[in-house]
Length: 622
Image (spheres, rainbow, N blue to C red):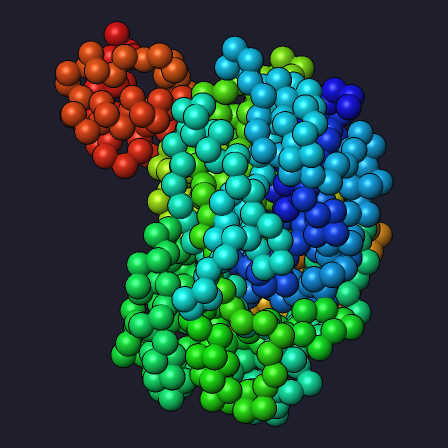
């Protein structure tokens, strides 16, 4: 077979974004997957986004990735979560058609120049002088390349558990990858085990939705991509119901056969998305738990029972679920199951996601101990970018914590490591007000364009958008509103009327008032906005956010600038921490293991105290 620049192993969310990024930057890419019908398969719930995850999808899109576009094209529902909170917490979430999502991803990759495909497994990587030379496949092919990105998901020695049954598999219906972990361990990598799970799937024709609470999409649905993707017109509802004490009692009858409680599962599961048996065991005083009933697509009766992940015997799962309101006559497509798989603790990686041990080898996705499509896709994109830059001997591309949630994700993995499936939350980011979902293009499109991923057209569109936002904001700061122009609106909004002229931007600071209200009620603002092309919904919302939260944004940027000083103190990869006896023993041990790039990174390592940081700063100052 021909030689490639980059081989991507695995066509899940990480592998697909890795292949797209590297190919669009100009590398010749081979994407190897065991089943081409399952590209970017939604193995768990059929949705994208959510709290903090939605921000990641928008960041991927702002940089020229495909996840946001595919999500928009296959949505069946859209909701902006946390609207009742500040904009730093707003998080877009989409319900997707599972089958169309995978097909759309495949179509986009097939129409991406520089991407080739090969249906096979990878059983070994070929290494020469501690540098990648290629891969060996299950069909016996040796394929040469300059870099390899491993995006194996849950397939490395995957083991599926249902009650006392267990069998090999990367997910239900797909074979596991058996030998690759052992080859990597032979090369000196450290591997461990993790566990995740998925719920029962049910026949929607047998559910009584009248006994559940409807969860419709937003009246005016948004989208993920900053490109001109189609607007969502029709939507399908999700539904909310609850477990009960009776349901819990039935589930407990299967605890003696649960692989979680009998010790057959050794890997740690996701703390923030536990199985139903784990919930009722850990929170035994709680009388009920929420279950979200989610449609799997436009033209299917299959529903996903979000909140009912389980590895209990199937008869226990079915008996318990039939006691849930609306499930009395439910028929099941398949039981829930747990899957245990190998991962490689991410402190064995550089910030580029290249392994420290083998040059040209990159890890992305669940192989690094993360959970979630969005976290995986972000890592895949970054690995694809950096593999491309590496083989062209260009500087690696690293996002800071103040740049993006993607920067927070990778910094957390490399600096802190993880012993349980890592999931992104807004609380993990120090600079949430700066890292909003609405301004991802402002933060990242220019950076991506500079390295050759985001197109010139994308960059110009983003620049024009924020030029308009800035101009509209300047107008509102300068325009004075008379009492006669605004008092009727203020009265309707149940806020105090004004007695003299006030700047439009000052009035807009009132929480009861929205910029669209002022456009609708004040002719001068409406005419100016119309004449200058500011009536676009995105421009109006962004301008409003910039004005309402200006003081908070300024304060947070000052905090970023202050902390940036620590990031400017570089640390050599061969720094001999053992010789600095003024450091605590734990700090020397942790610093030597992580090998931080900067003082800022060192300060985020668990076990490194402020006193230890002071020692390093004094030493570097000398």
